[in-house]
Image (cartoon, rainbow, N blue to C red):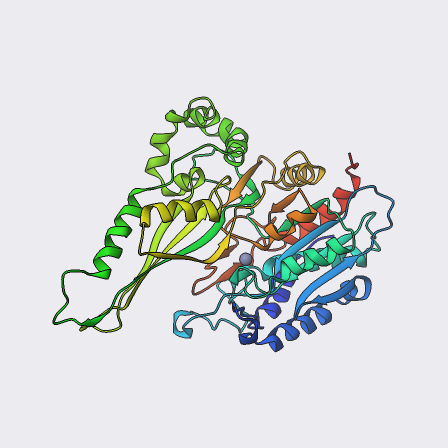
Length: 448
Ligand SMILES: [Zn+2]
């Protein structure tokens, strides 16, 4: 089967026309947009909808099952992505309107084009093609598309709900593939060959909100105390208490795989479990590297009163943290309480612990690795931990092999969560091609 860029991009353009914006409060969402998208998918991929069993979980999550012949002993797989998108912001910021599905200048423009309707398109194109060729898998395949990934699950985590549905039915998965990177050069790390990064885990996410209350009053007679000065001191103290750098299994796996292609520097990184001090000078020069070796904490917001001549009755400060494997929201809370001392209230906004780290010994990983090398001669496949969150973390209760990988060329998508989100036309058939081949190939790998 030959997938064509033009066809793939046109189908994706149709999906982008639905403003499937999520919100932490489901009642604030326009579900008609989601139902519109569902109808469009039915019309665009008729064979998928004739052959697979579809059910709606919660208000709009799509869970499909393609029943296999059962000839293979392989466990079922689940391909995941999310239907929802972040708000488009000010229309003036866009070169082309965010929900028109405009194809121009070599790109499809619009909210969701990259994050992550492109992944849904890749799955649907692949399966539609397989069915048209009379293919039936030897094992079961699930497709799962949640509707509140961008708000971390919000008041109804639809990906977790789909996992619960499958768990209740006694399903154990051989692998999950959710949104993630593609294949390309990694210039920042000075690697000499193209890399396909397969994300085997993700850092945790937590917003800590610190509150100091005061009596407030007129700014003309402020007294000696200042709630903002107290909070300012606390900000300095927290900033000074950075989490220490350390080596985890996730980061060690990553550098063992790519170290041999990183020149002299690679030797230092591959040896980090024995001589970590040698890595520190590199880490300290590059924030993106540092983030792989510790829990990060960024003070992002401080708020006092609403007017210049009013003393605040409440000062709040938000510290956004990305948790490294081994730390938890609770362990961070303990640390912050110790620094803050009496008189400061600390609460957690959104808070997720780091995910489990998936094995790289599974059939599915080997299958992704072999296929990626086959489709991109000369490249290497490297396991790595994702700094951002995805729905994938919700599937660990029924799967040890949860990966985040897209199959598209690196740089296909740009502007995610920003103005001018877009997806490159050239090479956009590569995602469908990857999943088309993966579904065939996975069946050939014998279950161990
Ligand atoms: Zn996404």
